[in-house]
Length: 456
Image (spheres, rainbow, N blue to C red):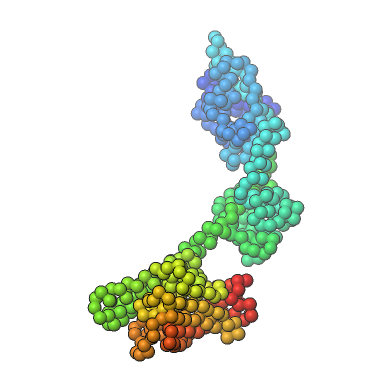
């Protein structure tokens, strides 16, 4: 039987097995190549942590060079494989196995391991890895321990805007926000100790100055002697994920706020509707209509991701509900987004006006007309809203009902003013609402500019 002392005299890595493939001896050069010292008589076929072929696929135990040599009873066998070490570094080798026979049966083997430089297997693997890197949807960047960029894939260009020639040879700090520079110091310290930095969320700067949310993984790069010489950074663009998380958080906050406000509003509507109703049926009709008006506003707010609702959509949702497409209703005005609170107030106002028009006003006859229009006065920073009916039965002026009182209170709560006129051929209602600076931003126009009302 061959012992470790016998193999230590050899100038290259070598190990021996018995006829069953169990390792019985190996020299220090083999242990150095494997990156570990396996226990004798316990490990079969090979002492490496793992073996892979040129396509980066693990080699099955029965396909290992020594296993094939012993099973086929070939006296001399050669194979090219890639040794994978415990630290995940890889070394391309050529193994040569000589099998010893006794009475026609294999009783042992000795294998010599020779480190190879650029073999065809290395080239194939490099080409395969290069193809993966170039076609990846994730940012893949190589850099030295000094932070100098050594590789920059197509996804990095697409997401961050810099071409390879603008980054390779330059410092990685070019894309790191000033307040996050300590991240790079931490990453380098981890890499120097051979540790992988796994999945942390951060931000990087694009060429046009935008901040891009990324999930980063950083791994050490080693040379053939397993010395750490750099790092590989893989970054996944999580901008959409961040946006979804922010939206979800905003929706929960808004939901909590709006549920409380809505319950208070519904309770007030219920009390006032019950107080003004002549009978239970009338209460059910008026209260149900007002709650449905609030529900339509909420639908529009959800579509607008709780930021606000477009005034034109709000008017159409409340005024055109159940209406025939006969051209009797005209709606016009510039684009404007109302914040959630104002949306609810205007929604209730429109519902009350529409209900009144259908029961007593222009929409109660076959010939009545309704004009709903609004305009934005940038110098006054006001929204002017006009509800004008024509061809309606002669109105009767008197004490306003709950619907008109609700409209007045709602508009005043929004910081605006309103004016009701009973004309001979129909009711006219005008509203003035202040446009706050925050509302103007959401609307997409500058209230201090004459072009207000147009999308910028």
